[in-house]
Length: 449
Image 1: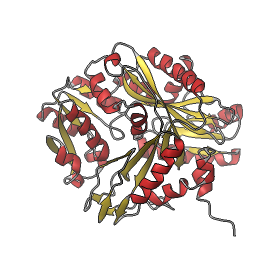
Image 2: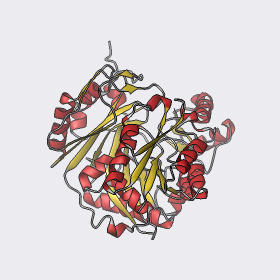
Image 3: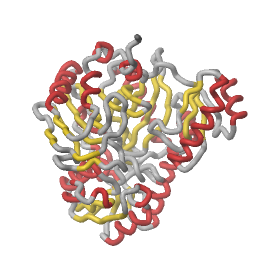
């Protein structure tokens, strides 16, 4: 087992990793930018190192600064959390070169899954269905037109090395392609340092469903069920739940079995998530894999009782899966609402000082947060303030608990997405489980005059 780890992240995920490490008797080192000097992860870690000014490229994305902090504090391993350097294959390689364990899959696997077209090809060879699209990267507008003519409109142009909705554009007819192609490439270059894009046929009215996996160093892989991540705004997830309202046990086991077989073939280790789109006919299509812990991992933890972050630490230290997860058992229903510092109507960021902060409690309620009264939400980073997670015997009880918890959640001084979540949970279509990725766009559409 590791003696000491460095957490290459901030906010609630840094605190979450500290919690898991403390339970395993592992000392922790926090890193922080000058904007996060008073953050809770800095206070509760055993040691803390300032790695630069607020801008992410000078701090949380600064690999030399991160490695220097790890070396001067003499850590055994680095946990990257999610975002920032978590899916950076170069960072994983530098860790290995520096004789520091990277808590995640190998650099080779991160690189394979991070290059979206290579990931599609690899998963197709392993037996997972993929959406029809370009064979490789699309270099220019002429090539894009040729691919679109072959697979048919509408199409989706996607950044090859990114995610989170950036570098993505829908094209419904040929006259829209030129502007969309140029915009997607420019946005991809700005967000990910690469203009590379590929093209897929657009699946209309899909559901976004992902499977949580764990793999050990002996080649064993298991899945821990699915999460429904369909409620999104501009391709950013806002609410997740498990089980999916549209999956039965037979489908869950069939798709989960294919996922496990595919990841055994590529030798996947540690935690990861395989993401699918499900069309109106119930067909699943692989879209990408996230080679890290997910923001929404508590949904799976609440439903299975498996501590995924502790599992990451144990797997990275060489403990086999059979000693970590004896048997996966699914209990009840779990829902997570992401409470962001955003205007609930426009989604504009709302940074500032929190003047009052009260989290809800009671049976089946969990709050993951690094916020507190008088804490500052800086404008430099992700707007996530807290994750509100509930679990109930079934979906109806989980929904009731989430409504109760949202009503009792007090955050003042900034605007948050709490009113938006309350609106979602009052919508008849959502309550009936009848929704797709366009749900929020329809919900927020201004009424016709």
